[in-house]
Length: 115
Length: 113
Picture 1 (cartoon, helix red, strand yellow):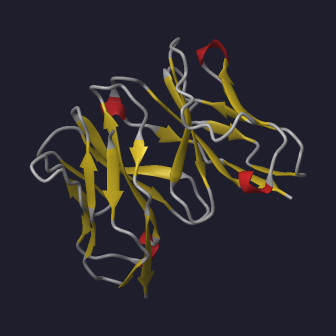
Picture 2: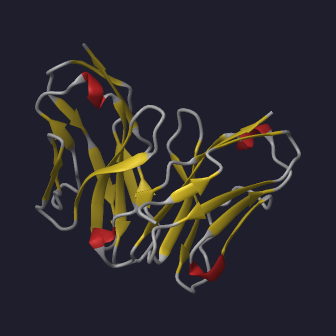
């Protein structure tokens, strides 16, 4: 597609429920990132996929968080047993590694509210 | 490890004032440097970038020069507008390490009419 696409754009869920957030990166982009932005906070790195390499999961805050990237394209971020502190905007970004000045392009984000 | 430090906000200026938002970095390799902007209720957008020392990135009247000697990438604009009110993020990508993008904490800018 023309840009990074994320869905849902808004999600309200009850505490304890599982949620899945989807990211469709720019076609051909080899690298994909998930970040989290809490209200009034900066960007917190969560996970990074690059090609067929093992993902860098060093930013995932707990084992309730997981992500996968199927076929080197679409990625899903899953949060199990959601807690109120998980409320945030989850941003996905992609880039064409080694090209375009290493610029990353962000989606509009998925706004998650846990009630 | 690599890091980005930018001035804390909020920064409040009057319209047509001169803007500087400071950003310094540490990196072990040869990073590309970026400024991203987030307007209220919107996602992050690339504002400008520079890929090597002494490069100047510019867009929408904003400029930043990659200063290797001072490890800085300060954002400047000569005359700000109310529509520039947003959060600005400085970031680096260390090409030599092929690593994740490192962001600063962001600086909120308020422009008063």
